Structure formats: C-alpha cells, structure tokens
Image (cartoon, rainbow, N blue to C red; front, side, top):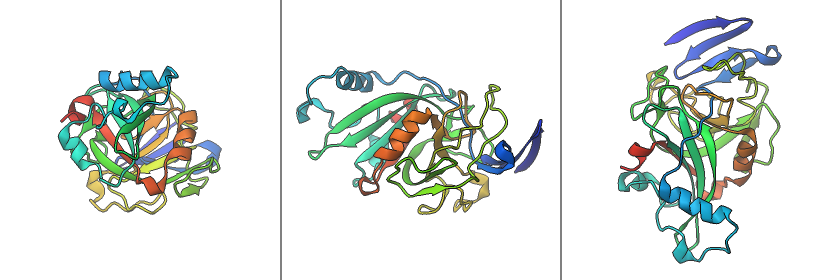
Length: 261
C-alpha cells in the first residue's frame, strides 16, 4: 500500500512498513519504520543479573552467570543461531505496548551469558505481531540477524559495515508530536524481509512488499515507531562500537510474554 501524506512542508510516502520523507535539509529521507522510545521494566531475572553488574561487584565467576538468557523460553532460545555470541534482547512491556527495554547479552567462553546495561526503548505504536505486514504499525516478533549499519552522521566507529549517506534523513513529527529530525543519524538494519550484506537503504524485500520491511534499530525520538526499535543516541553509538561481525549478532525482539514461549 502506498499513501502520500503532507505535514506542513514535509512530505511522507508510506512504503510497506516505512516511508520516504522529504524533510530536513531539503533532502530525501528513506525511513521504513518509526521512531519512539519507552521504558518497560525488564524481567525480574534479567534485572537481578544486570543490577549485580551495575553495582560494581567483582567479575562474576562462570557459575554466577546464567546458562541461558533470562526471560527467553525454549522456543525462542532455539531460534538463536549456535554461532551467535552477541544477542540484543528487546523485551516489550506488553503485546499492545510501544514501551520496551533493550539489553545486549554476550556469551562467555564457557557458554554462559553476561548482560550489558539495560536501556529504555520504543517499538511500534500498536505493539508486536508474529505476522508483520506493511503499514500495520506493529513490530515483528522473532530472532533476526544484524549485518549492516548506516546513518546520516559519520561512522562513529561501527564494526558492522556502515553506509554513511545524506539519504538517511527523517523529518516531520512522530505519533506524539515529537520531531523526527535525528532518528536516522545512526541505524542498524534488522534482517527482517531484507537481503543481508546490503545498505539499510536497500529496498529489496524477499518476502514481498506486503510483508513490509525497513525494520531498523535507530535513534529514539521519544515516542512509538512504525515498526522499528529505537534507543537513545548515545546507546546507539555504544551498540555500533560493540557489535562484532565475528560474533554473529542477532536481535531477539517481542513482548515479554511471546519471548517467554
């Protein structure tokens, strides 16, 4: 479905789950899914592990780290590739909520999992779905690889291939009236209905246009997204500097109830 909307001097063209934006700097912005940020409390087990790490305790022995990522059920864990040593978990507050928390977990040499900090985040306006379609304003539930990054701003030290382009622009306002100007300063493409190894701006959709696309991790703008996961800019920079291609990073995303399955 293609829909044209005009907001002031900003033009939006909705393509699948995203849109092209004629906005900031009079440039053409390619946006797929939205922007927004929220804070959903992490599962108790995850929060406890993160709290210990944040308290400055001595490095934990392997026995003190979990053998499995807290909050993920057997079906979800089974979808994580065996080679993946970095797992970004976006755990949504509820099935119909746009509030999420994000934690990067790293697998140790002995197979345990060490948590990073937990960050507030946003997902799509209408929450989560296992059957994402273009324009449904839901974020897809699942486990997806992370191969490619980019942004309007220069590469801040990304280990993933980084496409620096002025085409990464967002303009206009979000669902809560917030500005979207900086939303695509940094993005990481989520490998949902896309071809890995290409720029996040690439429009190929192997599942077909009806299934939507352009699902990214990008800079939070303070409100719900069209389908993406958004986190604060400083954390985006940290994430770009931390994700390693050799560790085969993935994102596990969905509401808590779905991820616990």
